Length: 269
Image 1 (cartoon, rainbow, N blue to C red):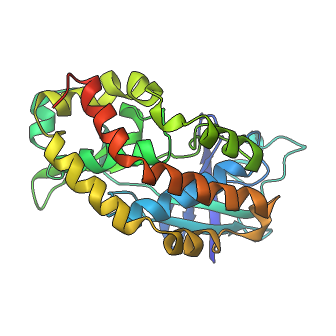
Image 2 (cartoon, helix red, strand yellow; image 1 turned 90 degrees about the vertical axis):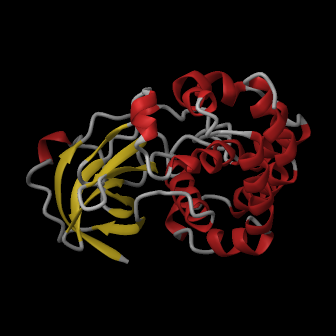
Image 3 (spheres, rainbow, N blue to C red; image 1 turned 60 degrees about the vertical axis):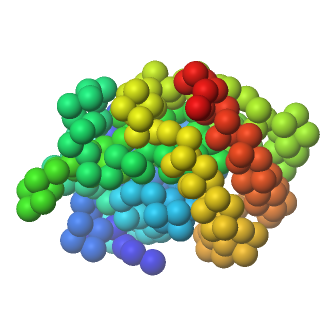
């Protein structure tokens, strides 16, 4: 497990993360036992591992620890007296020379991996992410290659119920067939997907091709391997994780419906 050597600053964001130094790299760190609980850490970890398995561009990340040897002098004034930030945390590497994406066709044309939007749109539906916006798609400029690369970040509030899911609530979502919801498209389309549709980068052929790959990759074995690596310190109830696996597989089972939902929202094939 990586050790956080120093905390540099606290960010103004819902999960109140820190920027710090780990393994001589700048990283963003989400600490345990925060306002939103440890489900946000589980969400981030599961989504990171899913994205990596699907070859979705995402910054390197993982599990780290803040302890008594971590230098917190720079941030001590931003830690509440009753707040305990030490323990097992989630981290994501800071992307240098990166900025949030903008809705511009000229910018889109210069994104080297723009076709990955098909994976990203499907990924958002598999994890029920209704909060995909310009701020959590980053563009990194490659000086040597002269183009932009697109990355996804920030998956703390996913699986429909964000930070409050549990076994009972996930079973209810499955029963209610929440894969038919258009909420994800309502909130994400104009914010991000639409320009890719208008440029025919996000399209039926690519979505269908990716949906077949998703079904091959997201298996029970894959999820078992991901879930077993979740730190025990983050887990309050093992039954919740069993239900989460069932929920993700149920959404994968209905991926063709969600492909058509994406297409229909933008006028069909």
